[in-house]
Length: 382
Image (cartoon, rainbow, N blue to C red; front, side):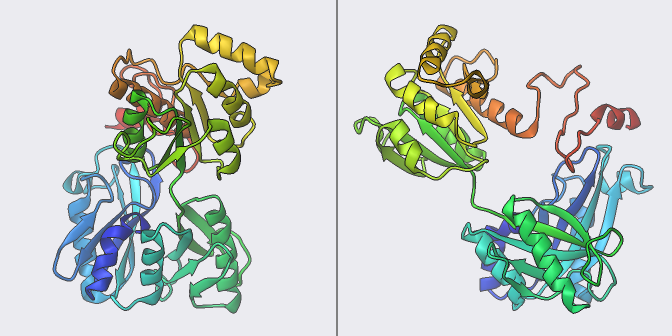
């Protein structure tokens, strides 16, 4: 439900009760990942989505029912179900949905959505499987390990749940964790569904060129906090980059050394000028970031690698460099080039191959529960 925090927060401000359906488990090919949510208020208004349209009608009805009787329920929708065609989930996958009624004065949910709406790090843990009286109960866990709310039951349950939730928050993960009612972790006890809300990952674009303008828009579309850095103040302007979150006028390597990065950060070097690129990449390739890519022809790439070796960059470090940046789409325009770069970033993050799905037999989804999904089996079942 944290993924629709911006839309839900006004409902709290207006004093609306609502029910929220959240995808808590996915098996096989499914349109949305765990954490996707649909909410329905007491007037029948709906926001969000749990399936991209497949089972929205059935889930909407579950939300309406939850508002009426005040009960949290967990429901399963799958292709093998007798009513699969009635509800529309015909993609070959299975989703499990937790439907929770939320009162407008519920402090834990209100605090969790408020934190997510402000872009703060926090995690909401709800009982997704357990005895009826605790189903849907919630804890809000902060980065320092402090928490709000209670799951009920044994006194050690909240402490263990908070510790497990904090571990997931530390890595920005959303998913389930099993703990026993006495507080010891083991399968078969209480299942928590944990939603982590973390600040958006960073994309830093070096070089205020025309290609960068298009890449900034693509980065924002993918959910990145986008910074443009260039040493030339005449080019790094708000008029040229209205969509950028930050504009920095500084030498690229100097800025990279002082700014905060992490394992989700994406670095895109579009300057293809040795006096900028070499000191910048020497720094970038030694940082624990998600992606380092650089624009330039194959000749530029070869010359750049030679210069990087001369300043001490190792072959192991050079192997991290994605250059020429982007997938082979035959791109010509800045917009097409930005699309090819964005596609490579997504493929690197999700483990994709970049090859066409048509006729390839490769999985469509590579990261459901950390496993590849064999879409060919799903298609065969259909």
